[in-house]
Image (cartoon, rainbow, N blue to C red; front, side):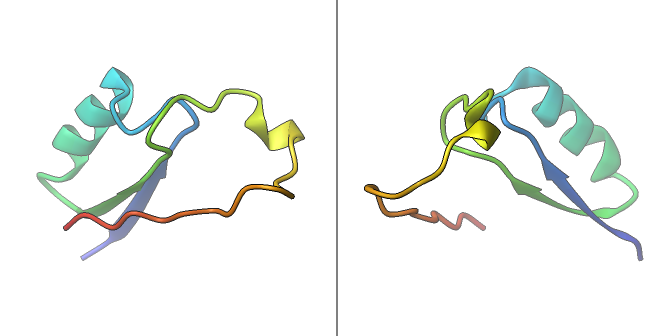
Length: 58
């Protein structure tokens, strides 16, 4: 079975991410990795003073 990783910078609750996940999950093994809040343009930033935290939900 094909595995698909979905990710975005609009946050885990973005409607588009939800819809895409629901449709693809019918035929594929889908994993989602997204920030807990919207992070548009954060790719231009650098993390120096705050630790990165990961929350895993199964």
